Structure formats: C-alpha cells, structure tokens
Image (cartoon, rainbow, N blue to C red; front, side, top):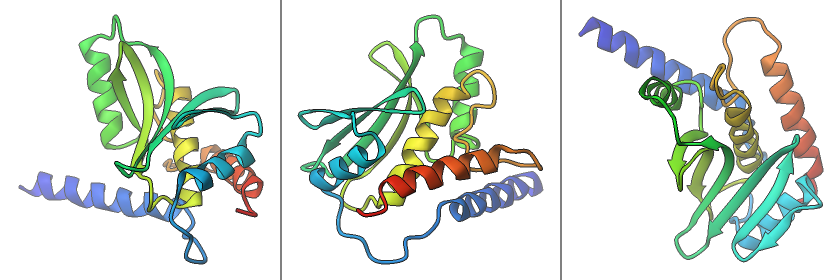
Length: 179
C-alpha cells in the first residue's frame, strides 16, 4: 500500500509540475471555432493547407495534421511517426509507459496501420496557448520516438530541454499574438 501511495504522490506531483509549464491565459478567450483555429494555425504556418475540416501544416520541418469537428466538439492534432507493422510487444509497452508519464498531453496511438503522435481536446474550450503547446508536444513525441518518448514540456535535471521547449513555445506564441 505504501508503494501505491508513493506512486500516487509522484504522479500527482508530476501532473502539477506539468500544469505549471503552460502559461495561464491572461484574459478570457473566445470559444475556439473552426475560423479561429484556422487563423491561429495560419499565424503559425502561413503555408498551411485547408481541406474540409482538416488542416495540414508544418512545424520545425515536421508535418502535422489537425482535424476538427465542431458538431462533436473535438479537435485532434496528429503527426505520423512510422508504420505500425513490426512494432514489437516491448515497443508497444514502452509507448504505453510514455503515455502515462513522459508524453504529457500528447499521446502515442496506432490507427490505420500507422503509429501517430496525437493530441485530442474538446474544440470549444481549447485556448490558443493550449493549442500551441499541444502542437509542440505532438511534434516532440514524434521527434523523441525511440529515445526519450517525451512531449518535451517537462524534464527532470539541469539539462537544456526546458529552455528549448520554451523558446519554441515563445516563438509560436508571438506568431499568433494578435489573435
């Protein structure tokens, strides 16, 4: 029982620390709509391509797909990582472990024969900074696949990763500042 309580304290402490990474918005934002989502994404990538309820964009040379459904009130950001064919049980276990602790708000998922980095959120309550953070985390789980399996916003130790994450977050936030 003591071990279980230790794990709970560790998980809750890590969750609290992760929540501290994304700055809280300073003012109440309007509900996220397809138009607002599109404006923010165009500020991040002026070459983004809109197809129906889907948007293709590129962040740091990584292709990202964003799909939103206002009727279902859902938004999904996805980054293709690799074919799911040949994923060994040990690798699948490692992906599930990462989903629990290091992928943060992004997740690894398998669909349509591919391994994806994903982020799923209700559309209407999604805030601009949450979207930017989600896109960065989704790109980071793809980048760190096979290594640290990290969403990138929370690291332990005195390394450089937090600074790198913060620089990218600040850069993308500036692009969408007027929105």
